[in-house]
Amino acid sequence: MGEEIVGGTLYVVPTPIGNLEDITLRALRILKEVTIIAAEDTRTTKVLLDHYNIQKPLLSFYSQNEAVRVPQIIQRLLSGESVALVSDAGTPGISDPAHSIITAAIENSIPIVPLPGPTAFVPALVASGMPTHEFIFAGFLPHKKGRRTKMERLREEERTIVLYESVHRIEKTLTELLECFGDRKVTVGRELTKKFETITRSTLYTLVHNYTFRNSKGEFVIVIDGKES
Image: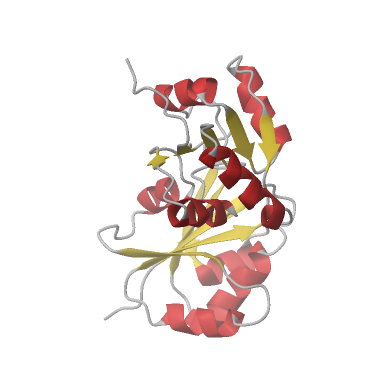
């Protein structure tokens, strides 16, 4: 028997990053029992809900409407409704707009219940074979301003480095990493947990000169060996 859903509480619910089986029983129960689900993309979330026969009102919440949605969701929480916060995939608050709702809830003394669950960088990091006792997760690199500065800072890291990247920028980013870091061991995870999952262990030089990701889909996790001390 799980904990009772409490009104006025924000539940942060991780969802699968690909394989719909990768969701906990607790997460499913909470999605069934909350008043409303705030979703980064209601269409994506509806696929998950339909798969598990869950019928709940959905409220869209993404970076372009967060200025309007954050106060709306906070008001609903203050009025006693229970809200489940989900992202397109993985744990809300990791490289997505959920952070703004979470900080607003904290500022309004609203209880937050975070659930453990899927996060794309963890399986890629573990499968890379690189040191995991210390690592730095840097998310997405800036597209323009500050991009080179961020890379140069990461170049000096002795810890394993984990990045996210989109299919549109993966080749550009690997090329720039090679130029900035020099040749290092790297693992690239693509379509993790999905049917066409690939985990490529190589070096930056080899990936840049011998691989193409042009016709790939989805997002990538890049795991880079830290600088030798």
